[in-house]
Length: 299
Image (cartoon, rainbow, N blue to C red):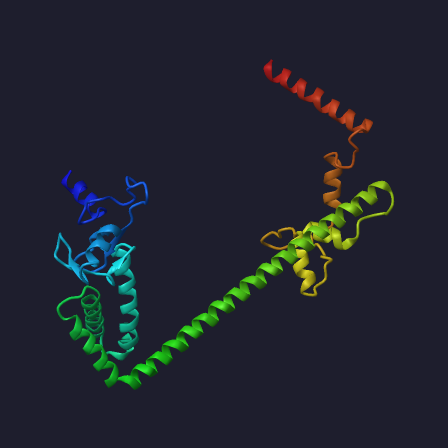
């Protein structure tokens, strides 16, 4: 409950306690301004600001006694002001302290260098006691290492330019592939329409058959066929039937029948036709002889 009350106090005037957007005054709506200093950040309404600054150039914040000046007042929140301030000083400091990892013998020294740069930025942004000392250190370092700083800045600019060129090249390549894909889709749609048209003409008797190119395109897939035609290859494909799997010993020709083997097959009924009377008589004789053999065996 106390935390909620403290949060509500942050969005009220530190002098009169009026809230943001209060319209109890029918003439105007209350707008608050923030004292955008690190140790304050409290808000004040326009009426209290005009009243206090009309008497003096600055007045103390009734909550933290931080001086409130006209130049430190802003309609933005303290977080927005601090973020903008951090971005601005970080850009200025990194422009001077622009060494990279390859400039150091080991990773530990490079990390210590980065930590020192972050300490400088934090001290300046948050207005620490050594903020002026850090600003003086930045100027002294810039004057002492001006040539090296300029060289590293030019190298960084070249790297950024190379990155931008690579990005532009990739974008052009993506646009080219997209353009080719659209052209290919349009060509496929055109080929399909042409195939349907010729098929309808064949059904109506206006032509004998569909052209060989369209047949090949349908059988091979329109996309593959268009790619083959674009590469200059023949659109007509010669289909080869699959080979019969050969036995382990290879394909062997059947041996010619000699006279003895031929006579044996003839005796076994190989020379008789299936519907011939001789074959039927033979089958009847075999059945009768087999029946009498079973009767004799049972007796």
